[in-house]
Image 1 (cartoon, helix red, strand yellow):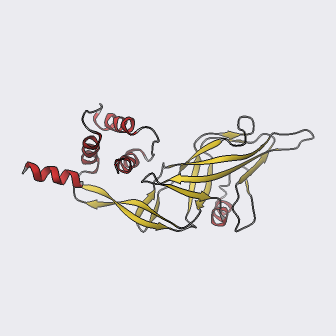
Image 2: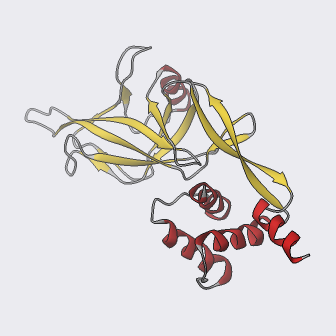
Length: 227
């Protein structure tokens, strides 16, 4: 789809995936590559960008099976704190590193995901700490399909091993059960960029992209017509 192709272009240029409207994203890419926005149909403009950025290569979509225990690092896209957040608030996170399945890119660095604040308890009298609980629910792959995510046992182990469970955070729930991140402190404040680990909830069939030799298919047809 056009959206998948634009996602791939953004990943190539910036290592991030925007959630803005497609036309706005294409215009921003053109400004970055050409210094100005171009006219014409969106598909023609995307094909031109692919020609400029990939040269004599292109990306193809492949179906893959992503295992349930696939662990990957994320960072908070905005700060979360007991002073400013309430239960039910949506939070956004960003994939911090490319995730491949058999050399097929499924979750690019910069891909976005969402979660929810499930518990907020401000600090109380007699020195009782504030508490904040977060669950991470889904991430959007390179093809914009949502993939369910959780804080499962493998992600807990990875966080504990690397010390990436965020400023005193403890993971909730016994091993094997779904839980969220639980943080306590006088005032809990997790700034944007806080590093955490989550994982894919269930084994899922999804799509990714792989780079292959040759011009994009649309470009090949255009060259053939000119000949």
